[in-house]
Image 1: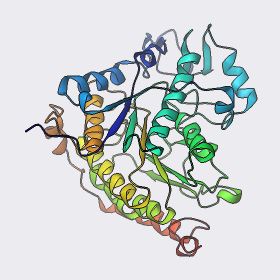
Image 2 (image 1 turned 45 degrees about the vertical axis):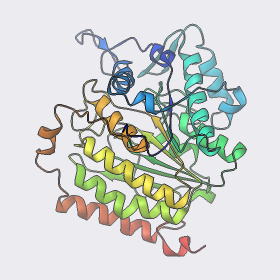
Image 3 (image 1 turned 60 degrees about the horizontal axis):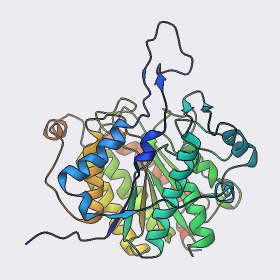
Image 4 (image 1 turned 180 degrees about the vertical axis):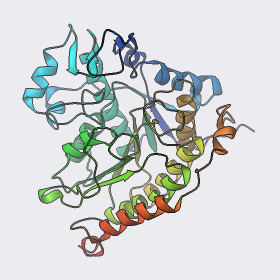
Length: 382
């Protein structure tokens, strides 16, 4: 008997996303004549290899294909300022730089709009019950894109725009974001910093990128006070530290907040083998974090989860991390795993360390006292 997936999982992909051209890159904002250019970190390879691994392992045929929706300027303007949209529009068909690290090729503005359309399409399919959950594999990424500016390889705030669309058009009253990219989700934070209808949680390497952002006492402003939660972890955290943060902070916060839909800006650069992070996660970690989110989503929002692809820059291991997440979402196991997995499981300090526990406990205790935070019993009772 052929095993059937436990869930109907949507998969959003188009080859055109891989044609966003970031050119060559010297690995620094200020190129030097002594640094030989190479491929930009944010290039198609690791993303295309996820899709190819899905096909080779047979998982792709178990997924429900989704198609990006067309987007209008009004869709983008739910999050971005007109001045910012004008600046990006000026690069359509000719290319340019959204910021010093984010080059745009001649088709990149069109492709960036299609990435937004992909995030909205995945969200709509989940909210309307066409699929149980969804993974949108597209580029350019979006979680560093702020309303009036961008950083870190992003152009438009894909997941944030999709969340705003869900709040306005799809009947959602509250949305939540669990950003586990190794870099702080500054864009999503800025998009909803004063909005009580969006809970934004970022677990990331402390003071890594962007610098001086993502502190745990940055809890939002105005009506959104308490609805922005940062979990900055010291470098070197692995499986045990991340799962403990999920158990102590992330899952209880979602349970208390009761969103109608959960987004996961899904970066794989907290992997032990990623060049742009200093964390130690493995396929096991991403499987378990996904399973924990599915469990709480089943409890609070009928299982509605939308994953939008963000970082992850090792072309050899990132595909297996994506496979682990998508297998977990649909409940179908292919048996494939990275050839390096057993070796990485054996790396020291994967277990929760006492100093990591102390930091996570400190952050949890802060949130339990913070004004408006879902972990604060007073706020949760309101």
